[in-house]
Length: 125
Image (cartoon, rainbow, N blue to C red; front, side, top):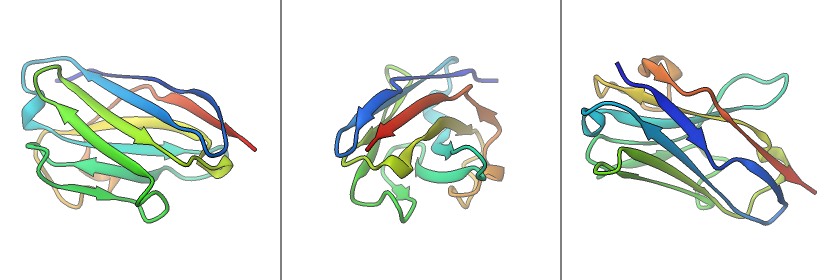
């Protein structure tokens, strides 16, 4: 089992940046595919981005492509989401998730077994 703890959320103005981190417990972090999802009030959980076990492949939601990047550090057991050119509609609780079985598709929340508690990201206009 793995525990995930997100950090780095906060309040930023439109056009600004935030960097979210997801720290994972356990020794097998490098064997997990990792994903970021977000949920705004009154909306369904939305796929943001994901990365394979090795970090060699990434995928992004259409609304964030070109503005967000993801990376992982398998030594530090940490997963990152760099969010640039933020917009008010990006305001949401951001969750990281771990898939121990490297399932596809990575954009589906059903591919993930473990979830963090979420961190709030708020973008003001």
